[in-house]
Amino acid sequence: MHHFQYRNNELHCEDVPVSRIAMEIGTPFYLYSYATLKQHFRAFDDAFSDVPHLTCFAMKSNSNLAILKLFALEGGGVDIVSGGELYRALKAGVEPKKIVYSGVGKTAEDMEYALRSQILLFNVESSQEIRLLDEIAGRMGKKAAVSIRVNPDIDPQTHPYISTGLKENKFGIDIRHALEEYARVSGLRNLTVSGVSCHIGSQLTRLSPFVDALNKLKDLIGQLRKIGIGVSYLDLGGGLGITYNQEDPPHPREYAKAIKDELHIRDVTVILEPGRVIVGNAGILVAKVLYKKTTAEKGFVIVDAAMNDLIRPSLYGSFHGIEPVRIKTRAKIKADVVGPICESSDFLAKDRVMDAFETGDLLAVMSAGAYGFSMSSNYNSRPRITEVLGKGDTYHVIRARESYEDLVRGETIPDFMR
Ligand SMILES: Cc1ncc(COP(=O)(O)O)c(C=O)c1O
Image (cartoon, rainbow, N blue to C red; front, side, top):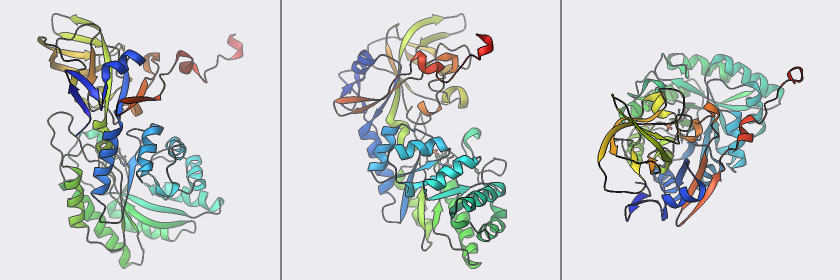
């Protein structure tokens, strides 16, 4: 359920016509719906309300300060993967004790920053990282709380690039060696064992891989408790999928039920790290048609947004719905929606049957709220685009469009070349 609906053939974000925003701020832009974001966060968080839990929004999916603030006001925490994300989270007012730090390659500086900021815990992913964190915490006179991110070797049945819980993936510590690692951690002076964590992949549309992972983690907690290693957090990561096209993923309520039905474990707080399921369908990318072109082979609709703005189709071959911002009676065509970038992989849709758009028409790339802006870049020296938050009958620019000066900020031509 989201608040991008047609009224009188005009796409609206809540009560604002999308075309009005386009006219006032120009295209392309990301547009999020406040009510949808809030509703999605609540639907997820409330589904776990009868167990001790902490919903840590995976901010890699969308790290805009206004969006982080919205979830912080709802009582949420965040899952971070870099010092930069920690900076953003603190800036948005997320409570440090609701921040968990995941990621396979944390730097010493980032560890120091997180320790100074007194985050809840680190999800550690290798023996070397454990040693470094112990050393840094010791140097700072602090104790670092850690969960080991285990790799449970479970096939999440999703795109290979977003599968993370298989033994061939770079993530986590093989669950078969987890006991030894925990024993090692509990012997280290500057670390305390806090929990067990995993994240098996993204855009999962079935419940069984989550339940299988939970069962493996529960077994591990049981074994740890037997050897006197206490664990207070069980982090199941994120990964719940959304409908981009024909997918029929479980509702967060069903996801939560499946988890809770299997939980049966005393004295743990469940940590959840949802990203996509909260923001994915709460955002769209609005673009304008620049040109149409037909070759002997096929048709192209050339728009002003490109792979640097939304890389998912190029990177994963993902599907995003392409909808007109204003419905008109028109013929249908089969075409690719492409951007101005000099790469054949620069497409937002391929071989899609859609309205025969004309130059100047606006179109909406649907389900673009997750891994959209946050994965965008300046490739082809394209300034990153505006982000807008629609709320009721108003809208707010929550990130200004970058300027050409922004593009070269920080670059210098050495004196010898002048
Ligand atoms: C450690 C971790 N937690 C949570 C997530 C969020 O996943 P999703 O957006 O599919 O919920 C990711 C995504 O890659 C992740 O790596």
